[in-house]
Length: 349
Image (cartoon, rainbow, N blue to C red; front, side, top):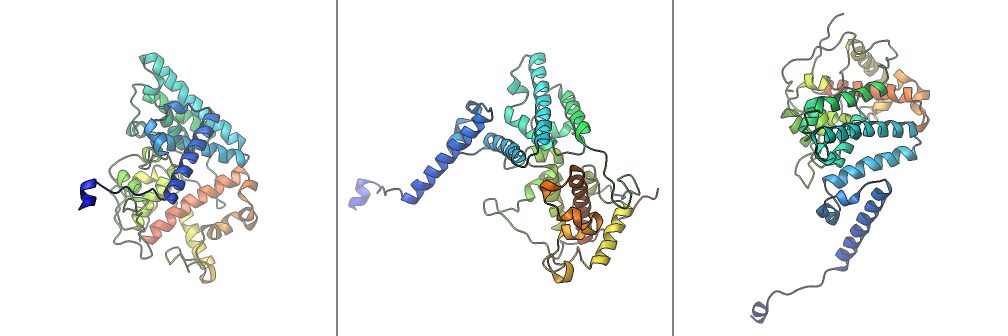
């Protein structure tokens, strides 16, 4: 009774919690210091994000400048210059809008959103669409000028399509995609649903739900639910995971972003399955060669050659990197469609 009368008992904070808080404080200080060195005006970061050490603005800055740091460490200076060129073009548009409409540059597009757009657009092969920018909050009468500036950059830095070793390109015998969303009869038998404890949903579900609701893939990449911008290919993978789970997907919308295999490419992958003994529909743990785990790299090795595949990433030429990226994109389509029982048809040309 005396305890109730005298009020709650205040226990000392455990040392483990104090140590954790100190580590977090030092981490935030280091992050802010690194951002300042990169030229970021950290005073523009919301106070609550600095106190929490996290938030949409902080994640945007971290993602962009960590990417720059990664490029520097791997010696990809040309890519850094290209990315800076894209950022400056977007910033030039922003300054033009600010002058034209007599608003602050940040009102035309906040700094963190500018970096999100540059980061995602720099990995795109297809053109930016206005709807994607509108969806992430860009509100300007000059949005088409921004789209034009970004797409001009993409055209300048996207090489001509690299042909497969079997001499075909995306325009040859294209896959006929149904107009309606395709709904698998069931989930792939080896699909494993892994919800994240924090949200109770799988990591891919947010992208899938937003895409199904009609949001452009590019917008999802530039402004994902966790605030950290990602690449279009990552969103693509999330949506294909939804298809593997047995959920319906508008394949036609996906095909506008990354082309599925054409007839010749599909036949190549089918032939590789037969020749290598690897089964893309089987349990990945045992469906590789000789009952080993399945490897996409091992699967496409006959297409690119042992010499190229054995090279370290840094030792590959840009042409080899682009070629491999295209093979992986096509193979991902092939694997998912085979796993959910989609039988493609192709336009004869």
